[in-house]
Length: 316
Image 1: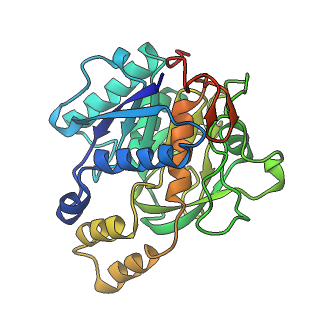
Image 2 (image 1 turned 90 degrees about the vertical axis):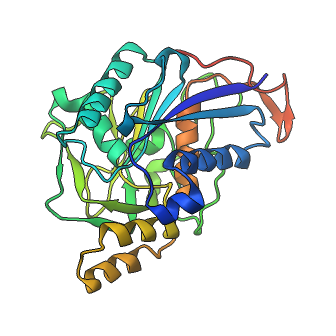
């Protein structure tokens, strides 16, 4: 019996025309990447079914009932999470309501999604989203993951070749501990990092006290100290865009930077040309969606003991 993960993708923007025409909506791009992540692990977990439904929150579209969902995914946007716009205020309120009233629903956000999730859920703890005083972070940059995040949810080994192989990033089949096994038996002995595409001018600022005790910082880049947050079984965010590749980011930047000085725009386009770890980042998101959900035992690669994933999603 398949384990179905029901994902509501909240589209907070529409891709630029050249991207929309060739790749579809942001929700479509995310869904395809998560399906590819599940396919990469098919030999171990052949019965994962990812169902995604898209909602245009700019136009006021929302799921009829969060109780029917397993996960929310909030996309990026050209808007700022602190903008005085009705649709942003409604999204802010909605995320807090889902977090408080439906604790079984996992919440993932990317870029704008990361920022509005932090703003909505951690505002009372002093977390603020603001214009980044350092300006834009554009192109491929390395995110240095924290030891705490690597131990809790797993991260790539920076010693591996590029692109890094996406292996052992899902829960061990017979684990009694609901947390996924770490990627390394001694993650503190290795530098852990992710290379992601970026295009943002806002950032999340933490108070001097940092995150609340149950929350874990994902990591930092040289430009941006808060590259994501993680609350086990509840929330995961990325400041970066694993859903962007060279084409998507370059086409987006050409629109965002249409009025920039040519040399400044070209410098940004040059930074986009680096290799990234989008597949690894997608694997970690899938791992997060599966976290705490009991999976059937797998006796050998490709051989299932009892027909696959035998229990429905567990409420936390």
